[in-house]
Length: 328
Image 1 (cartoon, rainbow, N blue to C red):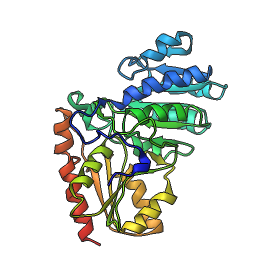
Image 2 (cartoon, rainbow, N blue to C red; image 1 turned 60 degrees about the vertical axis):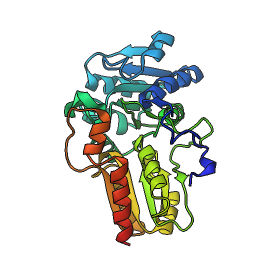
Image 3 (cartoon, one colour; image 1 turned 135 degrees about the vertical axis):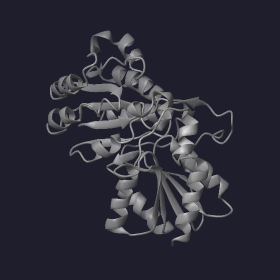
Image 4 (cartoon, one colour; image 1 turned 45 degrees about the vertical axis):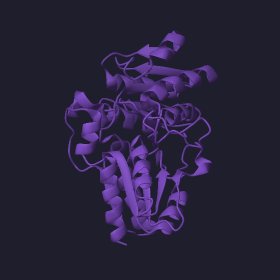
């Protein structure tokens, strides 16, 4: 059943549920952050509209810097601003930042603990027709391994807005991944959110499987839990913070359920699945199944078709839940 304490959208399972890309939440949140703190600045690499940085640029033109197609400069300039009292947000497609400029992020931002917020847009195969070159499915892995770096993946546009506002107040390097395609808005303004803290969205008496997800696919996980309510008792956890994990809550849920399925629109190696596997192996070994990209690149197609083809749809999640339950 839905966890009433999560205060989720009552229409979340209806076809009429509002749809909005998580990148829109970033665009709204960074404006609010800019209103609250005059030190917030935004830098972009020729993708102002696509990354939803245009509203900030229009409202605060003196605090917006267009770098052009130069992602390495984007990171290096932001690093200097970050150690000079500013709170820079740098935005581009995630394949370019943190993809193309990973070394500059590592050496100038993370190594110096510079107060830079890295915004990677157009993540996952739901980018759709842009194809594999623009579908970032490795970004959480390459950022999660970096010292001093926090990593976040919001489940919908409302959480994305909250997350953007929150990281503006955190000291130190942060990476947030956003999606291009619209997805269900199933949280509300009242849904609890705190960086570093996972939330229980679906609960059950005597649960058998913990489904731990991040990003818009959390909605698919909830649909799977609803469909299986009479067959397998499931808990669904929104682990929006990939680093640092909320180890206390996650271990509590893992011990209670005794089996885990991870769900992410990312390579299962190195992302949320990898992080949960490390936690499970170290603290409380249990059977685990991974829903996500299985060591493959994406391709051009419609977002919903690609999610299904690469095994991240509702039926695939249900199959993983049933499989891991039998392994207990």
